Length: 324
Image 1 (cartoon, rainbow, N blue to C red):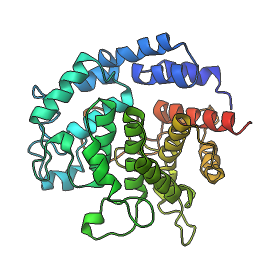
Image 2 (cartoon, helix red, strand yellow):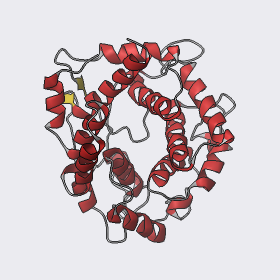
Image 3 (cartoon, rainbow, N blue to C red):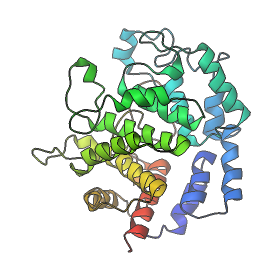
Image 4 (cartoon, one colour):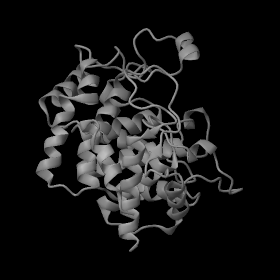
C-alpha cells in the first residue's frame, strides 16, 4: 500500500507530534530532518500545550493517578479523569518529547521528589500494585531514563497461567485480559529497548504475545466470537484500553526491534484494519474515552490523523515484510 500524496500532505498539515512520525515512518526522511521536527514538540502545538499545564512540583493536576480533589462523585458524574501525572507522561511519550531534554530531566526529578501514588503513597517511580498502572510506569520510566527494574520484576511474577496479565489479579482473577496484557507488553518492550532484553523478559513477552495471537488479536479463545466489539473500533489516545490497531502497533514495534518474522495469525486483524480505510485514504476516530482531559485533539466520527498515521505505518510494515 502506497499512501497517496494528498493523505500525506494532510498528515503533514498538522502538529509536530504527528509530523515527525510521518517523516520518519512513512517518508523515510533523513534523521536530521525528522529529529529537528521532533524537537518542536516541546515548544509548539500539543506538546507545549500539555507542558503548560504542568504544576510547579512537576506533577499534573496535583496527583499521580487522580487529580487532587477529584472525588468518587466526580468520577461517577464525569468519568475517569485523564489529566493527572501518569496519563500526562504517557501522552508526552506518544508525542515523542525528547527524553534527554532539560525539561524532561527536570520533570523526572520533580516527580521522583513530589509525586506519590493514590493507592498507598508509594513514590511514583516505584510503581504501585495494579498491573496496568505499573506497566505504563515501566514504559514511560524506561523511555525517560528512570531505573524501573524492580517494577519489571514484579510484573514478571504476576503473569497469569494463560500467558498474559490482568489488573484484577489482586481481586482473584486467574484469566488474562487484552487490556492489561497489551499494557505490559508495551512496557516490557520499551524496557528492553532501553536496558536490553533478558531471558525472563523475552519469555514473558513471548507468552503475552501468544495470548493475543491465539485469539487473533480480538476473539474469545473458546467461542471465536469477538471478546469485545470495541476491540474492532479505533480510539486515540488509548490510555489503558485495547483495540486491534494498538495490538498491531505493538507487533510492528516488536518485529522492528527484534527482527522477528511476521506471524500469519495477525492477518485477520490486518484485513480488518484495511477494511476500515475510507475512500479518501483516511481512517476515522471511532470513539474517545469519557472523562476530563486537558484538551481535545480530534473529533469522534471524523477522519483522524492519529489513527491514519498509525494505520499506515502498520500496513507499510506488514506489506514490506510480507513481500507484497
